[in-house]
Image (cartoon, rainbow, N blue to C red; front, side, top):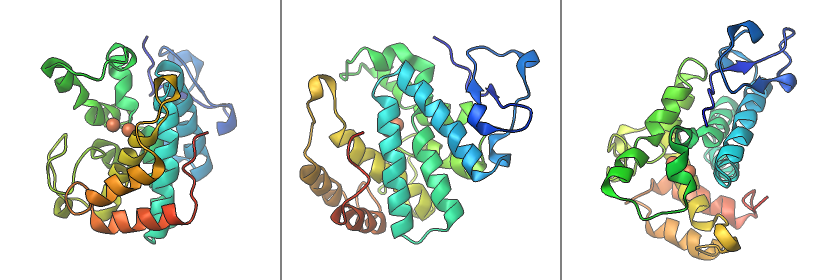
Length: 231
Ligand SMILES: [Fe+2]
Ligand SMILES: [Fe+2]
């Protein structure tokens, strides 16, 4: 299955509510827009549209991405980021795993024991996701996607950047992503970790896998009751 995510069409009056994503490029059907040039609402609608496409193609991944978006947004507010930055975090969360669409078979077979060859493919998905949206979303959002598997101590991927090499905002999604991955419903509705256990895991990785400031904000979000329940 091929989904060309760049082919986002809008009606001629710019109404994003009627945006569609088409499966194949057809220049005659409409005008490709740079989503980043649109207003906030339109960007979010476009991102949500692609998020639903992702869920269709890879069940569970779209839902996971929506949770990551919500948690990242809440952390961003807690950290005092600007409205624009909080929107970027939300968009980055929705888009962060889009790169998985480049290898649907690998992610849909339910096999999480990866061969070395499969792992080489998996570690490319942040870069692939950013590449898909190049020229469509803003450079800031592309970096959030590209760096969502980096770790505070530099042991992540794709570029093994450490905390001091990345702005704080780029260290938010890794925390939200890890928490969501630990608590997402999996096959047969079995959760790997309870919410409490997952929060403990995130805390134990503070200063190692995750930026301590982000972890503090995350814990404050979780303590208040949060937007992290399963839809
Ligand atoms: Fe990912
Ligand atoms: Fe993810």
